[in-house]
Length: 69
Image (cartoon, rainbow, N blue to C red; front, side):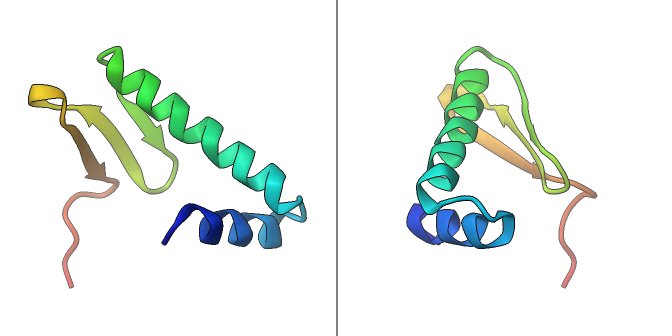
């Protein structure tokens, strides 16, 4: 999914404008990047967390462990 698609879905589900949804999405992404750059984890409620990895690579750990299909 691309940012406009995500913003459209957020707007539809929350009743805010697509522009407001896009701004909120930008804030979340910037906060995640800020935390990672400063060596901190950044949780995404119900999904998992990003944590800083070696050589500046971000690692995402799913909530509840590995997926089993």
